[in-house]
Length: 61
Image (cartoon, rainbow, N blue to C red; front, side):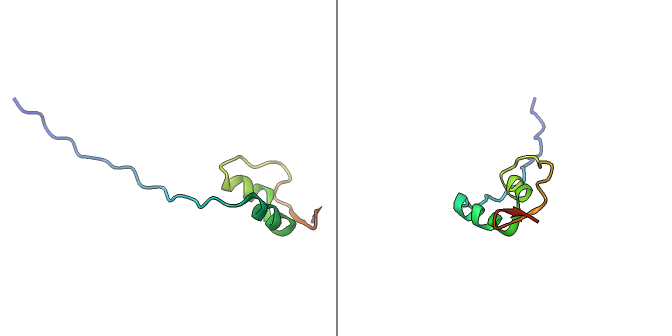
């Protein structure tokens, strides 16, 4: 008595992120290129209140 073969289901491959230097993140935050929530999203963290404001030269805009 044989067993019926089951179809093989493969999970999609998730592209690996290049590790980014923390100093590069800090520089992009200071220049106003990234928001705090964008950096948190890159690392898989949940957004924070007020994290969508741009920071330029250490000041929220």
